[in-house]
Each structure stands twice: as C-alpha cells, then as structure tokens.
Amino acid sequence: VVPSAKLARVRRERAGAPVTVIRQRMFQPAAAATHNPNNDVEVQNAATDGISSIAWSPVAGSGGVNYIVAGSWDNQVRCWEVQTNGTTVAKAATSHSGPVLCTAWSSDGARVYTGSCDKTAKVWDLATNQAMQVAAHDAPIRSLFWVPDKNFLVTASWDKTIKYWDCKSQTPGLTLQLPERAYAVDVRGQLLVCATADRKVIVVNLSQPDRPFSQVQSPLKYQTRCVACFPDQRGFCLGSIEGRVAVHHVNKADDAKNFAFKCHRENNDIYPVDCIAFHPSFGTFATTGGDGTFNFWDKDSRQRLKAFSKANAPIPVGAFNRDGTIFGYAVSYNWSKGSEHYNPRTNHLLLHPVPETEIKSRNTKTKGFGAAR
Image 1 (cartoon, rainbow, N blue to C red):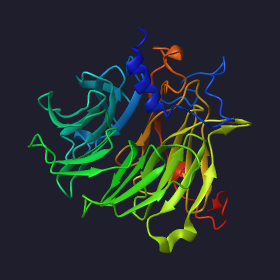
Image 2: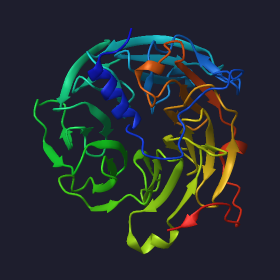
Image 3: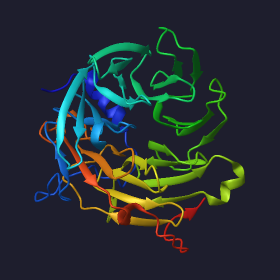
C-alpha cells in the first residue's frame, strides 16, 4: 500500500530529508547481503512497517528475563519477553492511530509510554493491557521520557515545544518553547539535550525545566540525526546525516575535550548516523547507521572497539538492555529515499549478545581517532 502524500512527507521528515550532503548516496543493498550477517537472535514478526523505536525495561522479570518493546510505522507497539536462553516470546501489543515514533518505560517496568504521529502520547499498563492518553501536541511527538526523580513525563514535538506532564492532568505542567522542531532528544538524570531542525542544541537542567541551561550551534555541519547523553551527565554525543559524531561537553571548562570523528562511511559513500546508545556500565557506546552496520566505540580513548558485518538495510535504532549484556537493534527501512523504495518485508528486530571483550574500554592511552574542534 502506497502511503498518502502527507504520511510520506512525515516519513521523510523523520528520515532527515531534504538531504543536502553532496557526496551522500542513499543506501543501496548488495545483492548477496542478508539482514542478519552477524548471526544474532531474531525476534519473529517484529513489525509490518519500519521500526522507529526500541526500549528495554529497566527492571528484570522473574528469573532474570528481559522485556523489550518496539514502536513502528504500522501504528503498533509490541512487547516481548527475552528469556535467559535467548528465546523471545510475544507478550502484548497496543496501537495508536498514527505511526509510533518513540517509546519509554516507567522506572518500575510496569508501564510503557508511547508517542505518535497522531500527536498524542499514551501510557500502556502491561498488567491490564490498557492504554490511556496522557499528553498531546499540535504536531507529531518525536521523543518522550519518564523522569523518575521528578515524577513527570517529558514529550518533545515537531510543534517546537517540550512539555512536562504529571500524567494526571490533560494540560502540561510546564511548556518550553524551542527555536525549531525537535529532531532528537535524550534525557539522563538531570540532563536533557534537544537537537532541533536548525542545528541548534538546547541543554536543559531538569531542576529548572522551564528554561534552557544553554543553547549552542551544533558542532557538525549537517543536520542532526540523533543525540545521546553521557552516563555521567557531563556531555553528549551528536550524530549527523553526514556520517559523523561529535563528542561535546556541557561545561565550557571541558571544551578542550570536545572532538568529532567520521563513521558509517564506505569509500566515497556517506551514510547517516541513525542512533547512538551508551552502555549502562562502561561508558562506551554504540552507533548504528544507514549503511547497515553498527559499531562499538570508546570516546575516552578514541577507539573503535568492535565493527560488525554489514546488513542489507539501514539500522535506524539500537539500545542496550538494563545490564548491557544484549544490544537490540532494528534492520529496517529508514525512509531516507521516500515511499517509492519501501519494501514491507525488510523490518527485523535482532538481539546481539554483548561480551565484555566487545564493549569494555581497553584503557589505552593512545588517541585513535577524532579531531579537536
């Protein structure tokens, strides 16, 4: 089914179009490639349209099992139990009236928050399998996060606002006006970082959520695609559509530690950095890209820790589970080439077991990559 012109435009907005990188060539899979070249565990029947978000429960289930949810362009949010032997079991599903762009768990693992192109956010109670609207915007909701220290929900939208909700009232407790549409957001503790459509980066201290702590221009020349806060909340990483990551610190006293590096490139072909995800224990991180690869990195030693084999489609999202022993990622069309290139048979959710040798810093003193800015 060819999506409507309006939905196609939204998808291209999500993918970061229009693309202005002269040398960038959109992803074209090799004929002999597979969606699972690294032989990872595949979650069956993950989605019937592009996967836009995945999130792991912060709490272990009985017997140490994990739970993961995925939101997708088929308007669905699905939940699976990941057993200790790697087996996945479908547990529940819920839906919106539009594509789902973001998902987040409550701190107790009992509920999942979901945000959609239908301009609403819902809370999904997994015990009752009931979903209730808890937030609304004037445009699609791009990102959302539950902040346990403040006991509120943060939503960021293409309507150029960030809103804070107690999930009881139909009106937000606070609204923060943005200079442009929210393209990528992350929250870690008291730190909120929002990258907007005009390459602005707004940093918010959630102790004062109604005002920016600072606002800077992105250190990258091209449109921001993703952002991830450092685990120690001292800075963040930005990824752009031009195959580059910037490591940036919040305090000016740490400016000398800022740098950027190239990634997700193949010869003269340049692909977007679709997602950045930090490991929960080691402070290292993963990137996923439009080239169909994911990599593990150590920003402190400026080393790539592990490069993985290339899949036959982009990897739009990835996330580590609560203890960092599993890296979940989607091999799925990212809509960067528009609706005419969509293939509904190319949406996969994969689980990669992560030994410490792949992701733990090697503590080398040699700076392997990156240029100071």
